[in-house]
Image (cartoon, rainbow, N blue to C red; front, side, top):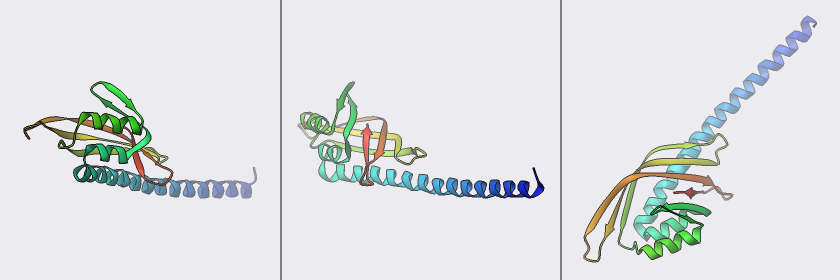
Length: 152
């Protein structure tokens, strides 16, 4: 290989390396932005739950094909999730949670969170009983740019 061809090859490799570095920086920014969007969705989900109740919040933040695991039973689809919570009569019950971790795929279209929750079941006398646990939610970016859960 001639010396000039070697210099051209080196320059091409250098330019390619610079662009790939830029793309990884941009992807790092996109990942950070997506993580923040998911955390914002978690906060909006919880705020909706506090304002409108459990049934409404789970309906609004579920993707059409979402799945939840409750009482060791898999409930599939947004409609089935809504029906499940209507049967549970969770009207006065409370649910709060703290997200301890969020991560997102390198393609920035799928992510997950986990953390601690406290579910307070309110009985007919107004007394509450707390149930504490760990949650794990999988989030999927929707075509409109919003994040909806697909697993909870």
